[in-house]
Image (cartoon, rainbow, N blue to C red; front, side):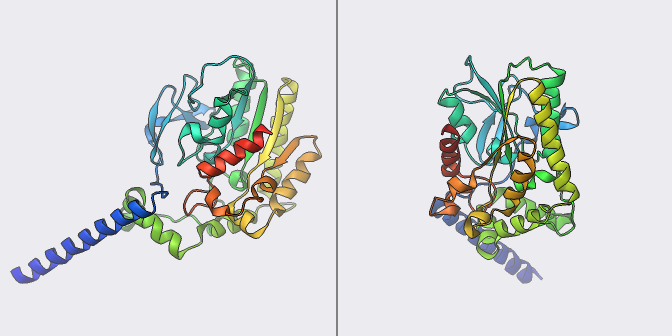
Length: 314
């Protein structure tokens, strides 16, 4: 019995040692892999009505990088205290810039170039309803006391929903004891991300899932158009410039797919809303994967953010 116990302990020790060795190799040779996770203490419920937001003057971890907020609960950039033109950037985790230093995101780059001051309350998990809530809070209820002169909405395909509306979602659900173990590995081991990216095509899965909602007559798509139109009408009444930027998935650049964005663009142009499709600019790049985080077909890398900032500057 004692011998069997000793064998088990030895095998476990060897396994853990091998795991740590492989993890070390991954961290050395594939440093671009980011660990998952946003510090929950940065978040606060019901900041914009039913939409959560970020706590003011806070600091925490954002997928391996430090994320700080200003006195408004917006992303804090190096050049924060400026006068002049102020533009509100609204979007989800892509515009928030997970996995990238704040000043290296396209919002941070534009802000720090001092072209104009960027207010960025964007947050992971945001979608169309949250964007409308932010505009109603900052522009209508607070009577635009921040003196915002322009609003840029950065739209990703998954902004049609807050939660996956279908059981066939590509998101891996971690439940029970096994789920807890897998979540631990996902959040703390880059080896987990390396294996997942090696044997699966997650960017393709996420795109194919989100593409299904971009069809004439689809309820979520029609509601999305309606919410964007409402935002446009509020801003028009307040004499605030409004632009919508359409951000592509990596799989779209890889395959040259633009149909979802074209459908949304055509729908919004009927309401004289200014639309800009960033895909046409990013498609000029040869290495599409370099524009996104490792194994991630939605969130941009430092290079991707830099190119989007270049597009916005033009």
